[in-house]
Image 1 (cartoon, helix red, strand yellow):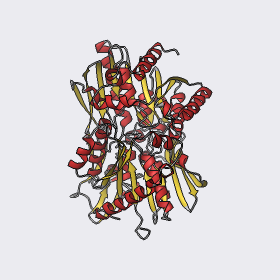
Image 2 (image 1 turned 180 degrees about the vertical axis):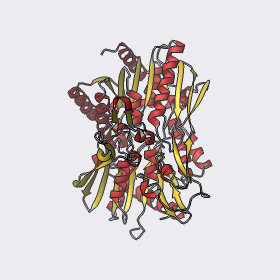
Image 3 (image 1 turned 45 degrees about the horizontal axis):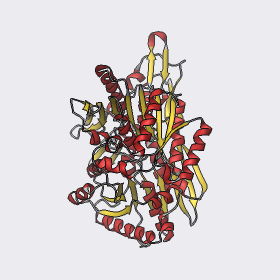
Image 4 (image 1 turned 135 degrees about the horizontal axis):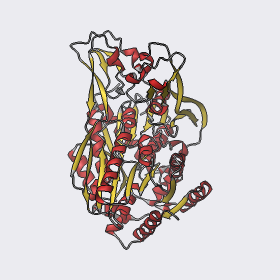
Length: 296
Length: 289
């Protein structure tokens, strides 16, 4: 298995709290344990938790910023062109009162206002959105964490920067943000295969369907891991069969697993069989990935 | 009174607890603001009396007949959404932020903007009052804006039907839709669970609601799954001056109730969980601890 070409796996789920991070960290441990060079990227920039499960030293970190306009009022003629160009209502202007203000929280950094201004009155300055941290773990593996600043409107820029930092040429496991909106899309867009983690409940099924629908629209292949198997009902399994989605693994509902996870422990510490199970899972993913038509 | 139920971490039981609160006593307006993964409608099967579409944003589209593949638009795009491909210049739908700049700079008027309006907003009766919920179409942005619409609608329903209490089931995380869910509410309840992740995300969620100066309380759900960790969270809350208003034990009946499309307070009203939730709801309504 060490001779396989590296690729990127995103671990995702529509619903939060289904066990994405549990799966991501355990696959990561299994791969690194086999000496496969792997990076784990925590793309859940609003609630990054993967680092809690590892000992590692901070190797490198950088701030992720976005350009926002700064208006030089000496040069501004209050013509209102920048306000007209801005589709995010981030420029407030009252020409008679000679008032112009940038509402930085609404700015998406598109640069349209700078293009609009014919008087060179707009310059751009960086505004912090968050941080990417790269940790070196034992055995030259790495953990990259995207961490959004509180109060920022979207984690997307920080997520993208984190995935870029993980680089190519090694296996990449991405712990994706929950949901099916932009942060999720931007993460899975860069993945070769998507593992959806869900639970066998009506909530889990409803969110899974939405994730599958989104991934199909993007032409991404995916498989499903059922966490907390044994609780809930069978409807989920019927859906998987009918939609022809591979069931990759089941993790039973078990207080011990919940407890182990709560403390940042790994499943193989609970029962050494888990290592074999996660290796089988990886082989399974490789098989499906190999069959998918959008290899990079 | 508007009460927002949030949780930094997903899966802590936010929706199950919101559902229980919504069915404990007098009729309420229930606003499902987790527009990215709206779930409460599964339990409550509300009437679709009103439906509105929501324009979540716009995407730039190239008209192949007009495009000369000059590539002038490419360096203008700060979202790296435009690239040269074998078919010519293309715009990635996923990467486009809808800023209009490429359309403005195109010398051949070959780019137009298309509205994305697949998201929906619904309002109607459910068995204990009125329910409003939004469903963001997959991959769409601006969920904060949809959350605002859901809340506006909920406030109108509250006035029109004389229902005093609005329960907001918020989204996970700490981003824009969460901020939209809690701005201006009377109180925030953060649902957490006894795990390292639970504590870490509670800290971030508390920072956000704290920055708005909103009265914030904490419920530790599934508290007995790890009592030591639960104690740690309680200590942290005390240091931060946050009141832990309830500790709810892990209860398999909650999942059973969900499978049967009931809230726990409907499914097992005499259970310990339901009793705790009833007491907690009283405390929340009284405003004081």
